[in-house]
Length: 126
Image (cartoon, rainbow, N blue to C red; front, top):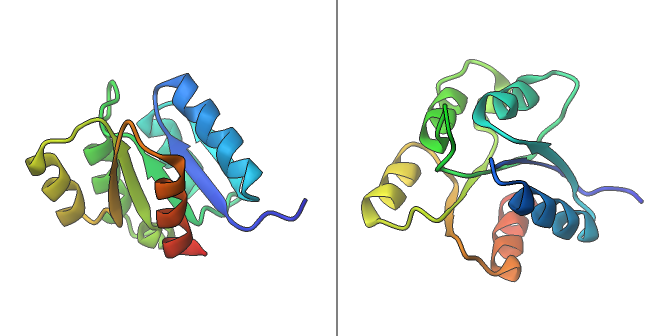
């Protein structure tokens, strides 16, 4: 199978990572999984990986999604321009505004419909 684009999924919940991996793979994407923020940053900034989009959870231990997003956007690495979709249960208006103002490309609330998330992915990276 020829994959369309690579998508890095950063989420501490294994079942979310697994569902996204399966669903995105079915659509022809190459999912890359990271179980925490630091591992996600390592994957994103690894020159061997080409990441076209990041799907990022907010509520994670040690380093939350806002901290990860800040590290991505303030980096001098070319990967700092990678589109990021925040996928989270953190639904407060302030959290949505914070994520978008920090440079998230979009903000999707859990529970989510995969068709909605896929539409946003396609709009950002084709």
